[in-house]
Image (cartoon, rainbow, N blue to C red; front, side, top):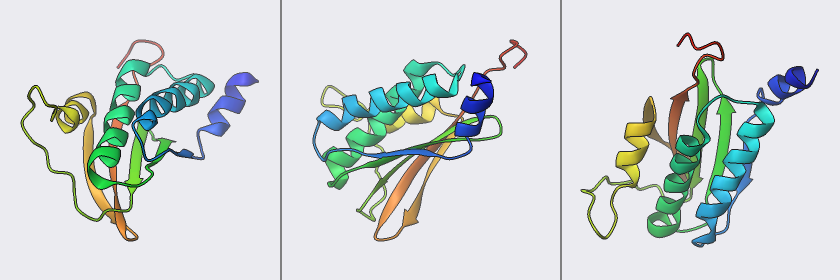
Length: 137
């Protein structure tokens, strides 16, 4: 019965609004871990929590305002979205000692990612594939 409840919970995206400061990164990681645990997902938590942390950090450092983080179930995995009130798209830059690795990590760890306008701002999203629970893909 628990698996039925956790599967039903996946039908509705889990969403949280985070603070507009650097504590948001840690809160994002904890939120994703709680959601995936409740969903009994087989996705490596480390990848999903790292992606969420990077998306939230970009909002706090570059877009300003309180990031809104969402996780939704897809046919083959999960979709992570981070919304902010700034319409300018993120600009990937070369990684170095002062940072710049965030979007490169998102691109590497996700199946695909992108940006779309929403209201006065934007949503940066990515999709991750879930491994088969039986090891077949």
